[in-house]
Length: 363
Image (cartoon, rainbow, N blue to C red; front, top):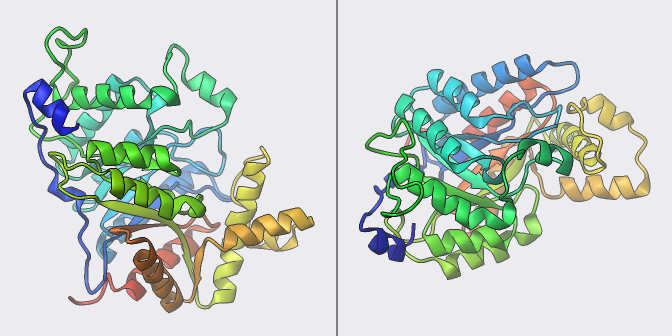
């Protein structure tokens, strides 16, 4: 909500100091995780969700600041189709870790439904919930149409949907508004801070104008990272929740014993992304399948370009790469994601990164 909105409505939403991350141990900056409940070939969604739960528990012990899950639909390799349900489960299995959506695709939902879901999450796990919002469908056009049956708004109406959601969360619709007498239940003393997510300039500028924190998807739109962050900072106007910009970036990262092993793991994610881009999504292939795949020259170029955006290698190499990226972009916080095959390899990768970046070190 902007300063003008607060003055017009005669109210101010509560401040959210937890927006700003905490750097643990000797880490130079806060480090967080974006998880997709990855389903690999040979594994079931139930196994993937159990692995995500185990990862969240370990992430809390290792010192990661946030653990976000993302809304995706129609993707056999991703089990996190309903963030609110998964976050409730993760909250019951952790105690201090901040949990959030990275994000909920708001055009797929009625704002009142999201306000109630995340109001309930905040009541269950007070002071630990982030509400990250995106405007993309998170799926293919046909699935998006099926999700949005009865909803007339789309991505172009995102600012209006966001305003409505904010009013429901704060309980401050102006007098005379059609929803002025409605209450999003439950509604407690606090509510989750809203983050805007994006891979282009639209959400960056909107987040800046509203004085909200911004999360940029560097892991799949690296060419737009610096322009979007510049736009966010240039357009930023102080609000009741932030007096200056706060931006995190999502980063693909894979750590293993050495660069060869890490690249081998990352190639499974790259092949999965290639298939997704070609309209043939499926479970994440194994490293062996990725090695044996008969790549055409165009496909090989895609894989190489995709891997060039992954921070991978031995633990120290990954830590150095993350810190170099943070300094180059000026990001306040990094959120690493690893969409690789194998629950053990994924868990080990995050553990190695935590250690190398200094999260587990004594302050």
